[in-house]
Length: 81
Figure 1: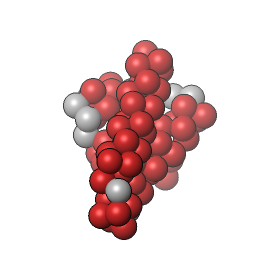
Figure 2: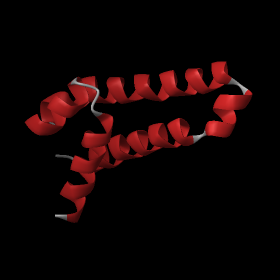
Figure 3: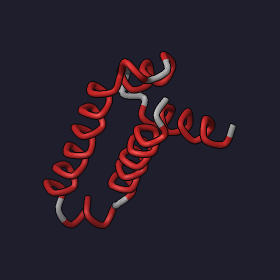
């Protein structure tokens, strides 16, 4: 798997977790919080669709099922392994 694609997917997945964890934004402006979450989720889906042929089957499974936490764990373990 291309290390650039791996890095970009991991970056998007970490960004999504950051948005989810931003309780201050969620409490202050729920609409903006949802818009940011939707935007990053769309970017993850777009990257997945553009590069799915070059991704390992297990990672494709996680991304196609929106198991984003598992996808990030997979990418992190692949980098460490």
